[in-house]
Image 1 (tube, helix red, strand yellow):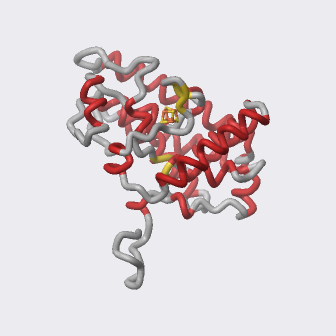
Image 2 (tube, protein in one colour):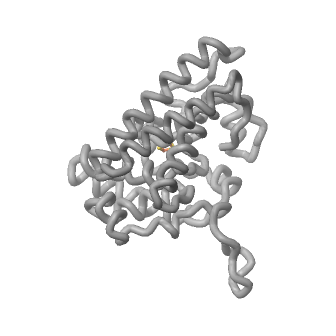
Image 3 (cartoon, rainbow, N blue to C red):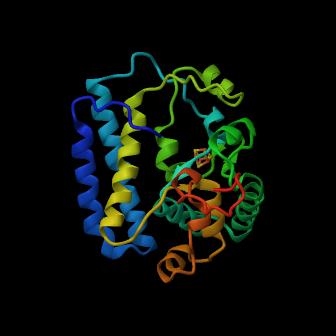
Amino acid sequence: MEPATDGDGYQSKLAEGVLNLVARLVPELDAGGIAAMMRELYAIGETTLAAVARRAPPPQPLACAAGCSYCCHLYVQVTPVEALHLAASILRDRTPDEVDAVRRRVADLDATTRGMRAGPRATSRLACALLKDGKCTAYADRPFSCRGANSFDAEDCRQMLDGNRKLTTYPHQRDIWFTIGRSLTAGIEDAGRPESQLELTAALALALAHDDPVAAWHSGALDFAPARCIEARPPAPASAPANRP
Ligand code: SF4
C-alpha cells in the first residue's frame, strides 16, 4: 500500500497514538499481549475511519461486500507482529484437525507463491489460503492490508486479476490502515526489534511451523527473513542469479 492523502492531518495524530500504544505494550509482547495490542489497533483504526468518513465521505458507495474476494487473490504485505497474531489466533481458536488443514493449505500455497512479485501473484489467480467459500476464515484478525483494501467497482477488481492496475478506491480507508501498520513497525523498531514487511503466505507458513510462534519469535527459533517482501530485501550479492532477490 502507498499513502495517498492526509485529509485534515489526522494521520500524524494517528501515528503518534499508535506509537504511544506500542511503547506502552512492548514489554508485554507475549501472545496475549500481542492479541490485546492488535484489538486496540483494530478499534483505533475503525474509530478513525468512521470519524474521517463522516468528515470526508466516499463519493460513492464502496463495492466491497461479503462474498466478493478478488482482493484475496493478491500479494498481501504484513508486519511480523500481524503474522504472529494471525498464526497464534489460528492455533488458539481452531480444532487440531482445522489447524492441520490450515497448515497444509498455507504450506501448499507457499510452495507455489514464495518469491512471486505482486503482478504475477495477482494474475496467478491463486486465492489466499485463509479464504473459504469466498469468505475470510480469519476475518476478525485479518491484516491491515486486507482492512485497507477497497474499491468502488468490483469489475475493476475482477480485471485486476487480468493485470488491470486502474483501481478507484476510497484513499482514507487504505491510508488509515497503512499508517497503523507503518507506525506499529516503527514502534517495534524503536523498542530495538528490527522489522521488515513480510509476504502473508510465507510469513504464515513460517509461523505455523511452530506450536507457539510468539515464543519461537522471541527465542530466535522463528526467523521471518525468508518471508521478507522482495522489495524490502537487501540488494542481491553479485553472484546471485539475476532473477533472485
Ligand atoms: S487474510 Fe482474509 S481478507 Fe486477507 S487475503 Fe486472506 S482471506 Fe482475504
